[in-house]
Length: 132
Image 1 (cartoon, helix red, strand yellow):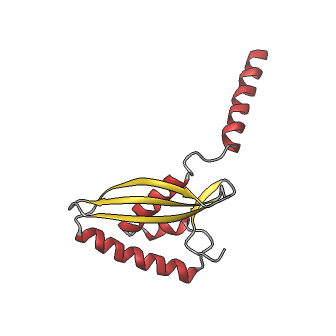
Image 2 (cartoon, one colour):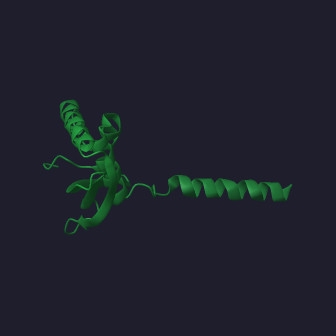
Image 3 (cartoon, one colour):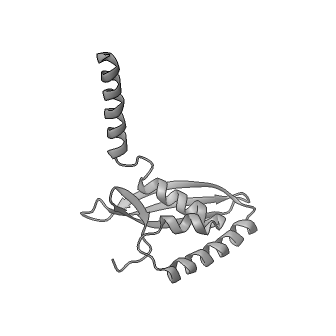
């Protein structure tokens, strides 16, 4: 019986440790890559969830821009891959960064993008507003 209680205790402790640890999938690189991929594929609902401190009108504008980016992607036969070139943190900051990406389209066209990100409550978001 003691063995069962010990096993339950170990599983409970492991659950608590993983539940309270920061999201390892929430890194500046991964968030920026996911945002750019969704942006160029026109996935407005996915983009909306990644944005930090944006009003409804601003979100609608970003979604319209994503629709145009989707058309651009279709003109270039689709998005082939997104590579992270570099993540640059602002001086004296561990919560603000800019992720430099290289996009390669299926017709060989290359494009560079820079995505500003912010860390809030141990999770990274896209920060398009520059006044905060």
